Image (cartoon, rainbow, N blue to C red; front, side):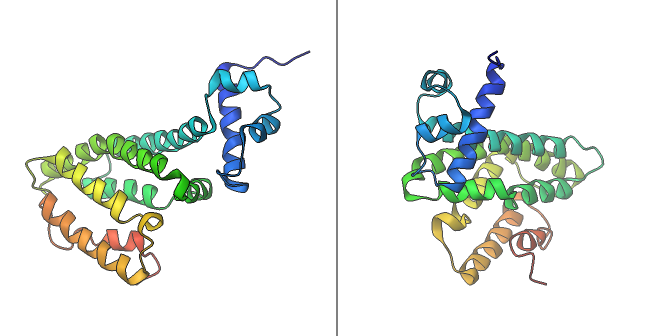
Length: 211
């Protein structure tokens, strides 16, 4: 008797199999046929959910982004945390991805996936900006931040950190990256009107083995 699965369950099954293939075989080498074989499904079933391998990769990336967004919202909703605690926890989750997400990011850094990587960065900025803006507004109420434009300030800061500090895009030497992180920390404090040195934890997030 053939097992009938719910659409969302089948869709996630395809994404799970494709994610493993993209990481182990490489996105450019993996084919739709590989995904069909891994899931033991017909071609028609695949095309019912996705139009192409690129669409599958987009869906996998969005799944990670939505998970990160949900995690950030969970942090923001904690009434026991102050603004700095919330920013630290959100940044820590974003900058220290688990093994699966890290491997997938490596695939996005491929020259063939530049457009897809750019889309993922844009989507991350769009989804995290309002969440972090809420934290900045909390910081204003707590008297630790002083900025007239919380959302716009966060958007500029997110774009710069997501793009310029991306090791896969620029491949900075360690010393170069450290200088940029230090500069970003200084800019962060100035833009948000925070006390000098209050964002020192940002450097520790990027370089946990130092000091």
